[in-house]
Image 1 (cartoon, rainbow, N blue to C red):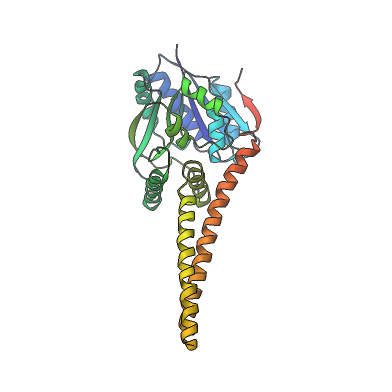
Image 2: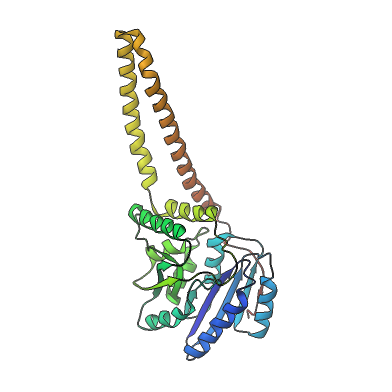
Length: 311
């Protein structure tokens, strides 16, 4: 009997862990009874009652497992680590807040049985804030155009991964994994299933502008060289522009000394412009260096406090 693993990361989801565990278990037993299953929750150091409820859930169903992290290891490391701890013939990743529709799981499995090693859920529309969704769309299109590797628009990681691809992930040894980019870069032929993302069932999202910026910088620094190339080209252009401005200023000052005052404003503007551009690209270079530094340190993805229902 084939086994399906469902991996659900959570952080302060006390209102959702019980309903999602019941809904997923019921769906698997009713719609996919020919498969064995496991449900793995990985908790990223929740501060509410999430862990208490997970202990109760695991006590009532031995097929439901839990990993408690010692600290919050971020929005990428914890889910990726959870994926690596699954034991099924395929692994399905989904959010705890019901924004990843449970009813798509049987469709994922159906496509998997047809031979697809990866089945991705693609958001075509969303009931989230329209401004946020528009910014996400702009980001996806921008990174797709700039990246040297194919990128998947509106793919959050929600999908099915065959055991063979999970073995590839286990061999990566990447301390800063970005699953969306990894799937596009290393994954075999995939099937994409479109869906409309619903609103959260309960609670508040833990994604803020800082976490979204962190995700954007990780993808930029991992999969595109464009910012550094733009800095090089723009720097060369500004060098020639300022050389021309300097020569023009010297010539004007030699011909007619009072004319120097006419050049004060453009010189100041050029100084501020160059300074701003340099500051921006120094920041971008810093992001690349920070990314390299994290990879060079080779620290573990997470450290565990304890496990429940693991043999």
